[in-house]
Every structure is written in structure tokens, then in C-alpha cells.
Amino acid sequence: MTKSPFIIDGETLQARLGEAHLQIVDASWYLPAQNRDQRADYASGHIPGAVFFDQDAIVDPNSSLPHALPSPEIFAEKVGALGISENDTIVVYDGPGLFSAPRVWWMFRTMGAGSVLLLDGGLDRWKAEGRPVTAETSAPEPAVFTPAFDASRVATIDDVRGVIDDGSAQIADARPHGRFTGEEPEPRAGMRSGHMPGAFNVPAASLGANGSLKDLEALAETLKHAGVDPSKPVVTTCGSGVTAATITLALHSLGYTDNRLYDGSWSEWGSRDDTPVKQGAGIIDDAASSLKE
Image (cartoon, rainbow, N blue to C red; front, top):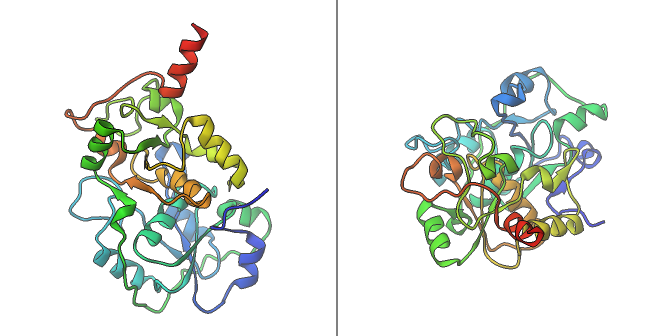
């Protein structure tokens, strides 16, 4: 089994604690249904030296959308204050291991950081393995983060409209299947239910197990089963741009970089009345149903 090159295990990270130019980032963020408070979790115990990356605060202040990607200048100011440089080795984690951390992994890479890793199993496994934690808030020395923003990693609503019209890329939606089909409501008020026409459903949870990203062979099989050809262009999407990054992580782990993350995701698409929405089964399920009939 071949693991993603972007994953670091707890044993390796523990051995490197205190290393110069190693920055550890707690990127935890949760939905209300998860009944976890990311700030309270950090305050009660985090990996020594870890700084807290607030995904509700390091955003575009001029956008009404949740988690909107900030400008390179704002991002650089915020993470510089956390003591992080683009030349550091950055290890990102969340509580369960594969929920919100991939989003921050994607943000750092999009802004030009060269070495960004994800902690296998997250903080929950780290604690379960008896590794060190502290309640002491980190007070890093400010650093200079010089951004090199890669706009090719980001898709806008107009980009997605174009993809739907011309079929130039596949759309891979990371939301759970019930929300994708419209059978389950969106957690945010005012959202229509369903998915973008032609989208494939690749639930973020299907790409991992027990807080770990699947091995490369299993990732390839999961994407294939969902109908996605990773060798062709892909736009990833989800509810608010967070779990879409898990699909992005999977694609990059397999060596496929021709993909963009739709930053507005369903928070933007589903809240408008001028965007096409389809309900019911997606392409793969439609095909399966027709075969059964």
C-alpha cells in the first residue's frame, strides 16, 4: 500500500517536535452537528508548539460567504502573525484527522507554501497514542510570509457555470450523498437542496477511514467508482469549500494537479435563484438505475 506524500504520521512528527522551521497548525473547525468547539479543544490540549488557525477569521472580510479565501495580502498578514513563513515545513491537523485540515493544507499551498503536510489521524489519534499535548497557548515570534498566489487552484462561480455549459471539467462534490441528492436538507438556512448538473458525488468520508486518508490504490478506486477520471480536469466543491479540499488532497496525492476548488461551493450556488440545481441521483446512480430497469 502506497501512502500519500502529503501525510505525516504521529511517530515521525513527535520525533521532530521543536525542530527549527517546523510549524504545527491546529486547523480544527466543526459543523454544529458534530458538537465540538474547536477553540475549546485547542485550549484544553493541543500538540506542543501548535498555533490555532481560525477558519472563520482568516477569510475575505468583504465576502458574505463562509470561509471565503482571503487575498494573498490578508493571508500573509494573518499567518505571519502566527509565526509561519512560506519556507517552513507546515504540518496541519484537525480533531478527527480528515475533516477541516485539508482545507488549510490547500490554502497554504495555494498561497505558495512549498512544504505542507497533514497529520495522519489528527489530534484524536495523537492523544489516543499517548503523545504529548499542552494547554499552554503558543506565543510564536511573528514571521514574514511572502505569498505566491496560484489562481489556477481556485474556481469561481463563473468558472463553474462555464464547466457545466461546455463540459470542460468534471465536478466532484464532497458532500454526503443525502445532501447531494437533495434527500437531506443543507445545514445552512436558505440553501436549496440538490447538486450541480453533471456533478459526481465523492463524499469526503469515502476517501478516508478512521481519520486516515486511504492509500493511493484505494483512492484511485474510490474516484473511479464515483465516476471521476482524475487524469482529466476536475472542479471540487462541497458545502462551504472545506471538505472539497479532501478531494483535492486525494487528486494531488495521486499526482493529478489539473483541478480547482470552487471556493463559494454550495453556500454560494445553492443560495442563489439563478443557478441550475438538480435533485435525485447523480450520473453514476442514474446509469445504475437504468441498467436495473
